[in-house]
Every structure is written in C-alpha cells, then in structure tokens.
Amino acid sequence: MAMPEIIGSMRSTYTRAVCMVCEEKGIEYVLTERPLHAPEILAIHPFGKMPVLRHGGVELFESKAIATYLDRSFPAPFVFPSDPRLAALTEQWVSLVNTVIDRTLIRTFLFAYIAPKTADGAPDREAIQAVMPAVREQIGVLDKAVARTGYLVGEQFTFADINLLPILHRVRQAPEGAEAVAAATHLARYYGQHAARPSFTRTMPPPGPPRRQEPS
Ligand SMILES: N[C@@H](CCC(=O)N[C@@H](CS)C(=O)NCC(=O)O)C(=O)O
Image 1 (cartoon, rainbow, N blue to C red):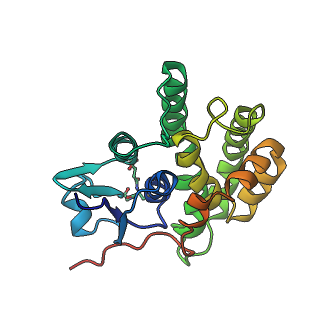
Image 2 (cartoon, rainbow, N blue to C red; image 1 turned 90 degrees about the vertical axis):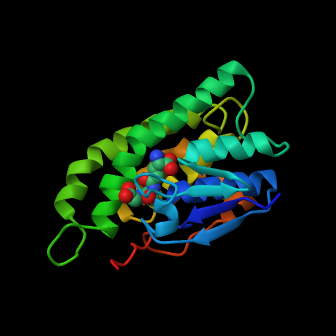
C-alpha cells in the first residue's frame, strides 16, 4: 500500500503532532506542505483545517483521528495505550489541551504576536497582557501534571505528550511564553527532556506561522 500522505504544514502544531506519530512509530510518510485552506485540504476537511491524511483509499481529517488511525494501522511502538485507564487519561489530556490550552497559548497568546489584529502589524500588547494570567494558570496546570513522572499519562510517552510538545515549542518562541515555561520547573524539565527526541528534532518547523492560500 502507498505510504501515508499528510497534507498540511510543519508550522502547524496539529500537523507536526501527526508527523511526530509517524516518526515515533518509524512509519515512512510524505508531508505535502500546503498553505491554510489549500484546495487539497478543503477537499478532505469540511472547514479546510490542517492536517488531513490520504492513505490508500482512506481520507481523514482531525489530528487525533489521524493519529489513532496511524497507531492502529502500523505496528508497535504504540502511542495510544491499550489499558483502559491510561487510554482514558490520554483522551483526557488531548481533549483539555485541544479545547482549552491551545486556545489560550496559541490562538490567543501566540497569535497576538504572529497574527496581530493591530493596524501596523505590531504585537498586540493589550491582548498579550489580557491573556497572561490564563497563560500562567494553564502552564501551572501542566507543570503539576508532569511533576511526578515526567509524562502526562502514567510513565510512558503517549499521544498526549506528542500533542502538547509542538504547542510548548511555539509558546516558548514569544518572550512571556518562554518566561512562563521556564518558571514552571517540572514543565521546563519535561520540555527539555522530550525536545531531544528524534521525533521532535526531525519535525522542527521553519520560523513563522503557516501560510494562507492566496485568493484565486
Ligand atoms: N481540531 C483540528 C484543529 C486543526 C487546526 O486548527 N489547524 C489549524 C492550523 S494549526 C488550521 O488549519 N487553521 C485554519 C483555520 O482554522 O481555518 C485538528 O485537531 O486537526
């Protein structure tokens, strides 16, 4: 069967997480770099969000669905635990990160730097100041979560960690984000340890946000 084709951009945290799954599992894959809302993405994701996957006759959207499919379709190592409690904890952290933490750390905080709505394109200081209490609170929650074992779930590296690491990488690119992570000592150690994994270093994105599709 053809190798999996991931369509998106390594600059997108969700695309990178899916690429990291392939790297962790030793799956040969192709990343087709495309801008946000590219026709190939819109052809699969109803709202044009990245990443999407093509594999043989299978087409999928949503990063967690893609990661689950890849984990089940290819042999060990597995990034989704089979033990019911650990599997549920993985779901729990992926859900919290994607519905709450990504919104604060990436869509609100980081976007105020990289995609500000200011007239001159300068970082939106007002938005950054306003979101910092939530950034610190949520980083505190993550710090506590990884304090005991150095993983989000049990004592193993799972998709919960894969899903979070690209977000931490991005948030550390802005000064207040780097300071907040450095002040959270357990989370800073967690990041330092897992950022050395080949799956992380081999998926390092170039600087800047994903490009947008030019209007035709
Ligand atoms: N729930 C989706 C979120 C994907 C997502 O928001 N991707 C961003 C790039 S990191 C995107 O495509 N943004 C364009 C948009 O929201 O229109 C997933 O897990 O795949």
